[in-house]
Structure formats: C-alpha cells, structure tokens
Amino acid sequence: MKSVVIYAEGDVRVEERPVPQLQSEDDVLVKVVCSGLCGSDIPRIFAHGAHYYPITLGHEFSGYVESYGSNIKDLQPGDAVACVPLLPCFHCPQCERGFYSLCKQYQFVGSRSEGGNAEYIVVKRANLFRLPSDMPVADGAFIEPITVGLHAFHLAQGCEDKNVIIVGAGTIGLLALQCARELGAKSVTAIDINPQKLALAQQLGATHTFNSREMSAAEIQAAMKDATFDQLVLETAGTPQTVSLAIEVAGPRAQLALVGTLHHDLTLSAGVFGQILRKELSLIGSWMNYSSPWPGEEWATAARLLTEKRLQLAPLIASSGNAEHFAHAVKALNGAPMQGKILLNLA
Image (cartoon, rainbow, N blue to C red; front, side, top):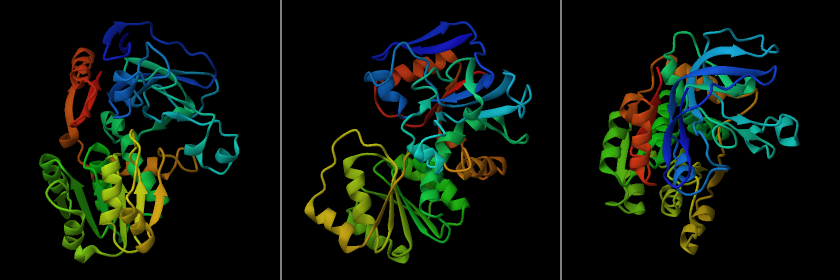
C-alpha cells in the first residue's frame, strides 16, 4: 500500500509498505478514503515534533471498514467511519468522570502511533465513529477539526443566542463560525489580519468581519456595539497577540474560550490583564474535542450538520490529490502555516 512517511525536517516520502494486520480482537482495518493535514502536524514534519521517526501522520481521516477482530459486533464490512484519534485509558479519575480530553495515559492515532496518511490503517474500535449512511464519506475527514470548535461550545454551555466572536479565521475558526451560525448564535463575528480569510468568513455567513491589522481593539469593540453583551469569544489562532486581542475585544461578562495552542510564551501587559478582572471575563480552556458518552455530543453534532449539508467545506480546501500530490503540497509549506486544508485523496 502507499503511505506518506515523514523522516523529519521536511523529508516527506511516498513509500510502498505492507498492509497492516489485525493484532487483537478489538482491532479494525480501515481502507482510507480521505485524510487531512492538521496544523499540529506541521511541527511534527518540520521541527522534530513527532514522538518517533519515520512516522505516517494523519489523524483527520475517513474511510471504509475492511475487516475487524472477533470482539467487534457493531460494525460491518463497508461501513463508513471517521477517525476519533484520541484513545484514553477509560479508567483514570478523569476518564471515569467523562473528561476524556484530560486523560494523561492516552494514545493518539497519527502522533503516538501510525496514522491515516496511507491506504490502510489498523485502529481500535474506540478510535472510530460510524458515519451516517447518507453522508459523503470524504466529508468525514472534516469531523475531527469541526469538533474542536464544538468542544469549546460544549464547555461554554452552548452558543445559542450568544454573540460569537471568532479570533483567527483559519480552518478551525471558519468551521466554528459556520457551526455557531447553524446552532443558533445571535451573531457571528470573525477577526483576522488576512483580507482573503475575512472575505471567506463573510461568504460563509459572518455577521461582521474586522481586520485587526487595520483596526485597534477599541475600534473593533466600538463597531460591535450592537453585540456588546452575551458574548462568547473563541481564540483559535494560538499566538500571544491574538490571545491579548481576544481579551481586549471581549465585552462585559463575556466568555472567552482559548482554543489555539501557543508555541511562544505569552506575556500580558498589566492593562490587558486588568481587563479580565474589570470586565469579569470567564476564561475557558478548551483542549481537544471529547465528552461523555464517548466520543461525545460534539461528534454527533458534527455528523448531523454535515449530513444536513449545513456546512461548506469546499471553500476551505487549498489542495486535494493523491499521495504524490499530497507529499508535494506538504513539502511546499516548508514549515509555514497552511492557507487552507491540504487533503490526501485515496478514493
């Protein structure tokens, strides 16, 4: 089978490898149809960020069940599935409370084990979410990134009737924007420094868009006077500047969900920190995308929205192609952030 293998420091190769075999009674062999590159994969490829090398990455994928172990009773060959990459221990105090994202004894597909950037993969039954029969199987590769924003909404007790503000209009932000729009948000605002991303946010249903390179936080806040209260702010970019900006644009008693992962130290000025206190902000740390019952309502909601065709995915895709095309697109990043989703298409 073809597999896209990372040998570190931008060394991306397409190799022929043996089809993996079932090893235990709860294993499932999946024929991969579509797999997406995640922003978290970029340091694994270009900055020695993987747990080992060589490694086949890929934790955002979908495909069809090929075969399975003797303990599997709820799947059939040909069932369409999406990857649920986290494998918590299910027995620690966090897991027993349904806080699966907080498990410290977890495994992770495409990071701590081989991933879905290959024609076939073997994973545990718990690592698969069965897709609705009337949903395009390739769309399943987007379920995992969709659930990132949905988990933040879950922790914030929903987004209905709230003025949702998305700081960072990348793939995660634009998916969260569309979900908020469909889940009853009163308004949805996108903030970014890239005019093309803001234009896309408007196309995808944003009520307001603001370029934070051209407007100060105070100017943005003043322009949102009709959405001052009942705010839920999602910071999805993961930079010190955008975290500070999210605090500054938040209104009184706003919820602030920190979704983006920082790769540089954050230092807040006394004035910005003081705004957390003076505006009585509620800070929510959002990590991964799981809740109880496993894998969580986030996954069911994502599948429902996709099945009902309420989310637009095509405008978010920068590149889609076979293994060689995918490897070329990944190498071309040279460590820079993606400007749209890069997909491996194995159909």
